[in-house]
Length: 279
Image (cartoon, rainbow, N blue to C red; front, top):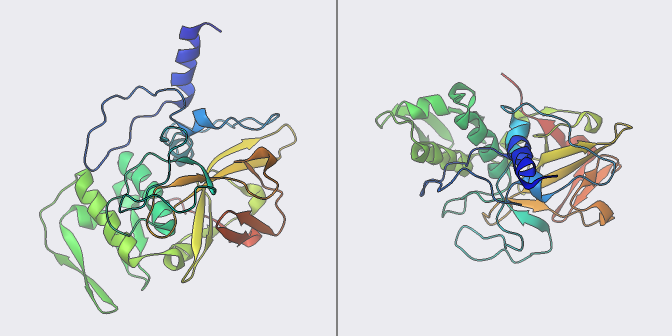
């Protein structure tokens, strides 16, 4: 294939605009080789990625930006994650400098950021652990949530702002008072056979854990394999997980994993797969 034709195909199938950074503006929208998830990880032999709509959450996740191969996961304080044997790649998204961006928070962040970039502000809302619903639209208009013990209420406090910095403040507030327990109650359970990109394996609790399906491929018989990503404790960058058990197709996981899904730092049950509700 001629180099120019190959480049055009790469742009058509794998390009997406750079994600906003709270601190710096992107220098270029042109993808470099191997910097997107769909570029880095080819499906196993015999499998192909199904087409997804370019405006979908699935497309958003399939085109996550990655740090260069060999990059180490960094914690919120700049230190390296103690284990480097659990992941294949590091997602190139800033996580802030507080110990907030953990497992459920990363899932919340990916979903919210997709909706924010799409301008679907009214769909951005999450429940706190006490059940209080926090709508981004109210935050965007200048309202803030007052927390007093286990009681929460909206108060008019700031001027209206639709900037990414204000959006990130909203996310960090949600990170502080939400978690796996609250998020698991917001999602709807789905059968593993019906898995889609964007679905979440989640166990609510203290501790609990959550990982998100960031890509999926299918063979001619309909068998599915999928990629998983997570954050963890303490707050750290999102990482694409290795498949440690029977890892011949790592980092791809097969939907035929049985009753228990073994991931490097957590074991889920087959019934732990859930999905965001569409509005």
